[in-house]
Length: 258
Ligand code: CIR
Image (cartoon, rainbow, N blue to C red; front, side):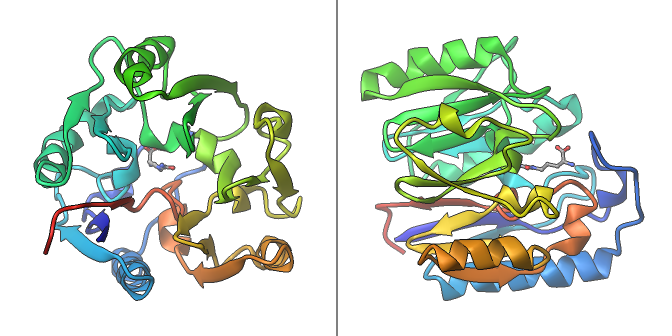
Protein backbone atom coordinates (compact mmCIF):
# COMPACT_ATOMS: atom_id res chain seq x y z
CA UNK A 1 0.00 0.00 0.00
CA UNK A 2 1.03 3.60 -0.60
CA UNK A 3 1.34 5.51 2.66
CA UNK A 4 1.42 9.29 3.19
CA UNK A 5 2.51 10.49 6.61
CA UNK A 6 1.32 13.99 7.44
CA UNK A 7 1.06 16.07 10.59
CA UNK A 8 -1.48 18.75 11.53
CA UNK A 9 -0.52 22.43 11.42
CA UNK A 10 0.96 23.57 14.73
CA UNK A 11 -0.77 26.47 16.50
CA UNK A 12 2.78 27.86 16.82
CA UNK A 13 3.30 28.04 13.02
CA UNK A 14 3.62 31.83 13.33
CA UNK A 15 7.03 31.26 14.99
CA UNK A 16 8.34 29.05 12.17
CA UNK A 17 11.88 29.20 10.83
CA UNK A 18 12.28 31.61 7.90
CA UNK A 19 15.23 31.89 5.53
CA UNK A 20 14.13 33.90 2.50
CA UNK A 21 10.72 35.37 3.25
CA UNK A 22 9.67 38.29 5.41
CA UNK A 23 7.46 37.13 8.26
CA UNK A 24 3.75 37.44 7.46
CA UNK A 25 0.90 36.40 9.73
CA UNK A 26 -0.35 32.88 8.98
CA UNK A 27 -4.12 32.39 9.23
CA UNK A 28 -4.14 29.16 11.25
CA UNK A 29 -7.68 28.13 10.36
CA UNK A 30 -7.07 28.70 6.66
CA UNK A 31 -3.76 26.86 6.84
CA UNK A 32 -5.50 23.92 8.51
CA UNK A 33 -8.30 23.88 5.95
CA UNK A 34 -5.79 23.89 3.07
CA UNK A 35 -3.80 21.17 4.79
CA UNK A 36 -6.91 19.00 5.16
CA UNK A 37 -7.60 19.48 1.44
CA UNK A 38 -4.00 18.45 0.71
CA UNK A 39 -4.49 15.28 2.79
CA UNK A 40 -7.74 14.62 0.93
CA UNK A 41 -5.90 15.03 -2.37
CA UNK A 42 -3.36 12.39 -1.28
CA UNK A 43 -6.17 10.06 -0.21
CA UNK A 44 -7.90 10.60 -3.58
CA UNK A 45 -4.62 9.59 -5.25
CA UNK A 46 -4.71 6.26 -3.43
CA UNK A 47 -2.59 7.02 -0.36
CA UNK A 48 -3.39 5.68 3.09
CA UNK A 49 -2.95 8.95 4.99
CA UNK A 50 -1.45 8.58 8.46
CA UNK A 51 -2.12 11.97 10.00
CA UNK A 52 -0.21 12.77 13.19
CA UNK A 53 -1.66 15.23 15.67
CA UNK A 54 -0.44 18.82 15.58
CA UNK A 55 2.49 19.58 17.89
CA UNK A 56 1.81 22.78 19.88
CA UNK A 57 5.50 23.36 20.66
CA UNK A 58 7.02 22.55 17.26
CA UNK A 59 6.20 25.39 14.84
CA UNK A 60 7.52 23.71 11.66
CA UNK A 61 6.39 20.18 12.41
CA UNK A 62 3.76 20.14 9.63
CA UNK A 63 6.71 19.92 7.21
CA UNK A 64 7.32 16.22 7.82
CA UNK A 65 9.32 15.81 4.62
CA UNK A 66 12.37 17.23 6.35
CA UNK A 67 12.46 14.56 9.05
CA UNK A 68 13.14 11.45 6.96
CA UNK A 69 14.16 10.07 3.60
CA UNK A 70 12.17 6.91 2.92
CA UNK A 71 13.68 4.53 0.39
CA UNK A 72 12.50 1.06 -0.66
CA UNK A 73 15.02 -0.66 1.61
CA UNK A 74 15.14 1.62 4.66
CA UNK A 75 14.45 5.11 5.95
CA UNK A 76 17.04 7.66 7.01
CA UNK A 77 15.94 9.72 9.98
CA UNK A 78 17.43 13.15 9.47
CA UNK A 79 19.03 15.64 11.81
CA UNK A 80 17.45 18.90 10.60
CA UNK A 81 19.69 21.88 10.00
CA UNK A 82 17.49 24.13 12.15
CA UNK A 83 18.01 23.10 15.79
CA UNK A 84 14.39 24.08 16.57
CA UNK A 85 13.25 21.20 14.36
CA UNK A 86 15.20 18.30 15.84
CA UNK A 87 12.50 17.38 18.34
CA UNK A 88 10.28 16.50 15.35
CA UNK A 89 12.24 13.29 14.76
CA UNK A 90 11.20 10.88 17.57
CA UNK A 91 7.50 10.81 16.66
CA UNK A 92 8.39 10.23 13.00
CA UNK A 93 10.73 7.39 14.00
CA UNK A 94 7.82 5.82 15.88
CA UNK A 95 5.36 6.09 13.01
CA UNK A 96 7.85 4.80 10.42
CA UNK A 97 8.90 1.86 12.62
CA UNK A 98 6.21 -0.61 11.54
CA UNK A 99 6.84 0.16 7.85
CA UNK A 100 10.60 -0.03 7.44
CA UNK A 101 14.01 -0.31 9.02
CA UNK A 102 15.36 3.06 10.09
CA UNK A 103 18.88 4.45 10.46
CA UNK A 104 19.86 7.84 11.83
CA UNK A 105 21.87 10.73 10.52
CA UNK A 106 24.03 11.73 13.48
CA UNK A 107 25.85 14.86 14.69
CA UNK A 108 27.75 16.73 13.39
CA UNK A 109 25.79 15.97 10.24
CA UNK A 110 22.72 18.03 9.42
CA UNK A 111 20.23 17.06 6.75
CA UNK A 112 16.76 18.26 5.75
CA UNK A 113 14.65 15.87 3.69
CA UNK A 114 13.76 18.82 1.45
CA UNK A 115 17.33 18.69 0.16
CA UNK A 116 17.09 15.08 -0.99
CA UNK A 117 15.91 14.17 -4.48
CA UNK A 118 15.80 10.46 -5.22
CA UNK A 119 16.02 9.45 -8.88
CA UNK A 120 16.32 5.68 -9.12
CA UNK A 121 19.66 4.71 -7.56
CA UNK A 122 20.98 8.28 -7.66
CA UNK A 123 20.32 10.47 -4.65
CA UNK A 124 20.90 14.18 -5.23
CA UNK A 125 21.55 16.22 -2.09
CA UNK A 126 21.35 20.03 -2.11
CA UNK A 127 24.23 21.87 -0.49
CA UNK A 128 21.89 24.28 1.25
CA UNK A 129 22.28 26.07 4.57
CA UNK A 130 20.53 23.03 6.14
CA UNK A 131 22.49 20.03 4.81
CA UNK A 132 26.24 19.64 5.24
CA UNK A 133 29.18 17.57 4.03
CA UNK A 134 29.00 15.22 7.04
CA UNK A 135 25.47 14.31 6.01
CA UNK A 136 26.65 13.45 2.51
CA UNK A 137 29.37 11.22 3.93
CA UNK A 138 27.00 9.45 6.31
CA UNK A 139 24.49 8.93 3.51
CA UNK A 140 27.21 7.41 1.33
CA UNK A 141 28.26 5.04 4.14
CA UNK A 142 24.73 3.92 4.91
CA UNK A 143 23.42 3.71 1.35
CA UNK A 144 26.33 2.39 -0.70
CA UNK A 145 25.53 -1.21 0.36
CA UNK A 146 22.17 -0.82 -1.37
CA UNK A 147 23.73 0.46 -4.58
CA UNK A 148 22.82 4.13 -4.20
CA UNK A 149 25.19 6.88 -5.25
CA UNK A 150 24.95 10.19 -3.43
CA UNK A 151 25.58 13.31 -5.51
CA UNK A 152 25.95 16.81 -4.03
CA UNK A 153 24.23 19.64 -5.89
CA UNK A 154 25.11 23.33 -5.40
CA UNK A 155 22.15 25.70 -5.19
CA UNK A 156 21.56 29.34 -4.44
CA UNK A 157 18.64 31.63 -3.78
CA UNK A 158 16.27 29.10 -2.19
CA UNK A 159 15.79 27.03 0.96
CA UNK A 160 16.13 23.43 -0.25
CA UNK A 161 17.11 21.46 -3.35
CA UNK A 162 13.47 20.56 -3.92
CA UNK A 163 12.54 24.26 -3.86
CA UNK A 164 14.56 24.42 -7.08
CA UNK A 165 13.94 21.06 -8.75
CA UNK A 166 11.70 18.01 -8.51
CA UNK A 167 11.14 14.91 -10.59
CA UNK A 168 7.88 15.03 -12.56
CA UNK A 169 8.52 11.76 -14.43
CA UNK A 170 11.25 9.10 -14.25
CA UNK A 171 13.42 11.06 -16.71
CA UNK A 172 12.02 14.59 -16.46
CA UNK A 173 12.85 17.32 -13.93
CA UNK A 174 10.94 20.53 -13.35
CA UNK A 175 13.57 23.13 -12.56
CA UNK A 176 14.11 26.79 -11.72
CA UNK A 177 17.38 27.45 -13.61
CA UNK A 178 18.05 30.56 -11.51
CA UNK A 179 18.50 28.39 -8.42
CA UNK A 180 20.04 25.16 -9.71
CA UNK A 181 21.82 24.02 -12.87
CA UNK A 182 19.64 21.52 -14.74
CA UNK A 183 22.79 20.00 -16.31
CA UNK A 184 23.51 18.41 -12.91
CA UNK A 185 20.72 15.90 -13.57
CA UNK A 186 22.46 13.80 -16.16
CA UNK A 187 20.21 11.99 -18.61
CA UNK A 188 17.11 13.96 -17.59
CA UNK A 189 14.97 16.21 -19.74
CA UNK A 190 14.30 19.54 -18.04
CA UNK A 191 11.11 21.60 -18.03
CA UNK A 192 11.74 25.13 -16.72
CA UNK A 193 9.32 26.92 -14.45
CA UNK A 194 7.73 30.08 -15.79
CA UNK A 195 10.19 32.83 -14.74
CA UNK A 196 7.32 34.71 -13.03
CA UNK A 197 6.78 31.66 -10.79
CA UNK A 198 10.21 30.99 -9.23
CA UNK A 199 8.79 28.77 -6.47
CA UNK A 200 6.87 26.52 -8.85
CA UNK A 201 9.49 23.77 -9.18
CA UNK A 202 8.38 22.12 -5.95
CA UNK A 203 5.92 19.41 -7.01
CA UNK A 204 4.98 16.08 -5.48
CA UNK A 205 4.82 13.00 -7.65
CA UNK A 206 2.30 10.42 -6.48
CA UNK A 207 2.37 7.48 -8.86
CA UNK A 208 2.02 9.03 -12.30
CA UNK A 209 0.30 12.19 -11.04
CA UNK A 210 2.10 15.46 -10.33
CA UNK A 211 0.67 17.54 -7.47
CA UNK A 212 1.42 21.22 -8.08
CA UNK A 213 0.70 24.38 -6.06
CA UNK A 214 -2.40 26.01 -7.53
CA UNK A 215 -0.73 29.43 -7.35
CA UNK A 216 1.57 28.54 -10.26
CA UNK A 217 -0.87 28.23 -13.16
CA UNK A 218 1.63 29.05 -15.91
CA UNK A 219 4.10 26.37 -14.82
CA UNK A 220 1.25 23.94 -14.25
CA UNK A 221 0.32 24.44 -17.89
CA UNK A 222 3.91 23.70 -18.99
CA UNK A 223 3.91 20.43 -17.07
CA UNK A 224 0.51 19.52 -18.43
CA UNK A 225 1.58 20.35 -22.00
CA UNK A 226 4.46 17.88 -21.54
CA UNK A 227 1.77 15.20 -21.32
CA UNK A 228 1.83 14.78 -17.54
CA UNK A 229 -1.20 14.43 -15.32
CA UNK A 230 -1.35 17.47 -13.01
CA UNK A 231 -3.44 18.07 -9.89
CA UNK A 232 -3.42 21.55 -8.26
CA UNK A 233 -3.60 22.11 -4.50
CA UNK A 234 -3.78 25.43 -2.68
CA UNK A 235 -1.16 25.74 0.06
CA UNK A 236 -0.88 29.53 0.05
CA UNK A 237 -0.94 29.87 3.87
CA UNK A 238 1.87 27.38 4.43
CA UNK A 239 3.86 29.09 1.66
CA UNK A 240 4.20 31.99 4.15
CA UNK A 241 6.19 29.54 6.32
CA UNK A 242 8.31 28.58 3.28
CA UNK A 243 6.42 25.32 2.90
CA UNK A 244 5.26 23.81 -0.39
CA UNK A 245 3.74 20.60 -1.72
CA UNK A 246 6.55 18.12 -1.06
CA UNK A 247 7.18 19.41 2.47
CA UNK A 248 3.87 18.36 3.97
CA UNK A 249 4.12 14.60 3.50
CA UNK A 250 6.31 11.52 3.42
CA UNK A 251 4.91 9.31 0.65
CA UNK A 252 6.21 5.76 0.22
CA UNK A 253 5.22 2.21 -0.63
CA UNK A 254 4.83 -0.01 2.43
CA UNK A 255 4.51 -3.76 2.52
CA UNK A 256 2.71 -3.52 5.85
CA UNK A 257 -0.93 -4.56 5.55
CA UNK A 258 -3.69 -2.38 6.95
C1 CIR B 1 11.82 25.67 7.70
O1 CIR B 1 12.44 26.70 7.49
O2 CIR B 1 12.37 24.63 8.07
C2 CIR B 1 10.32 25.68 7.48
N1 CIR B 1 9.80 26.97 7.80
C3 CIR B 1 9.98 25.34 6.05
C4 CIR B 1 10.36 23.95 5.69
C5 CIR B 1 9.90 23.58 4.32
N2 CIR B 1 10.27 22.24 4.04
C6 CIR B 1 10.62 21.79 2.84
O3 CIR B 1 10.73 22.55 1.89
N3 CIR B 1 10.92 20.51 2.73
